[in-house]
Length: 333
Ligand SMILES: NC(=O)c1ccc[n+]([C@@H]2O[C@H](COP(=O)([O-])OP(=O)(O)OC[C@H]3O[C@@H](n4cnc5c(N)ncnc54)[C@H](OP(=O)(O)O)[C@@H]3O)[C@@H](O)[C@H]2O)c1
Image 1 (spheres, rainbow, N blue to C red):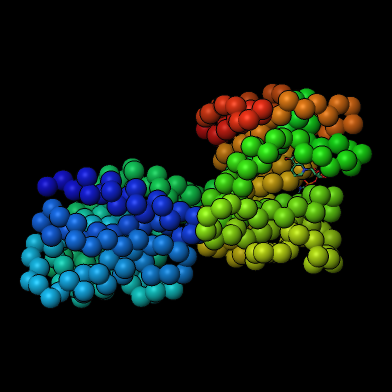
Image 2 (image 1 turned 30 degrees about the vertical axis):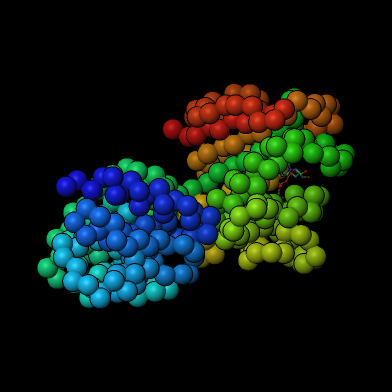
């Protein structure tokens, strides 16, 4: 039996919780009796029980009947450390299940093979790497963070048809359409942190939370600013944990303790901060919403010239219309 069908089911189901489990990875677990699924569990919300725990709880309720040939299938290696919850590997050993099938090995150095080792040492047969690539894909940001020692960085910009960010004289009309702005809400919802700069908060007073019609663990916020005292009535400081930092070294900020548990950051700022991130090679995905509206001579250019993005090595991943605007996604490398 190759377990691919059941693993695909667990991966697809686990992905349903990507907005509530973050910044934790999404995980799905199944118990199979021979090839039949008899229990399923998912990591549904940040801080809540892990998928294996939810699944094993169901198994306990089915113990009224003799169960044989049980397999626990898990999209990500079960943990072997005390975090917000006790180690899942211990729970599996205690359950008596003797066959475990895993999608991908957990890249978190706190786990990274130790969950597998512990189960094997306790007489459990462990098969790993079933649909490994698909299992990693649903936790793209989580794998990136543990491979690169910093969060995945998305920069989002709204640009006028003539390549401007905003009107230097300070008029604050929307550049892009409502369709694009709704799309930005989804983008915010999937990130762990939203980051901006002092000028944007002072000039625009943005909320920068994810306004979507489904449950979401709201992104935390970071404001980069040398201003010492801020009026807490700015919308930015409401609805989520926030940090204000006067650190100007962007690489240091990416490794700061406030971001310890974060796998993804979305930068939503003006040209100064956006270009600082680009110059420092700190952009993994650039999302541009380009409108039909022209700002004209009073507008501030996003980039020095059109070649900047080529220079940084960005390649177009997708390019399509969204309402009257164009949404272009570029990735580095
Ligand atoms: N079209 C869009 O998508 C979009 C999105 C956001 C904002 N905007 C527009 O952009 C305008 C502001 O743009 P901006 O370029 O002047 O400002 P910005 O990029 O939003 O912020 C720059 C500020 O960030 C702080 N900062 C800290 N470390 C920095 C670093 N390493 N490099 C650069 N800045 C750093 C400084 O704040 P302190 O001065 O407080 O020290 C600096 O003044 C807003 O008025 C808004 O309308 C447009």
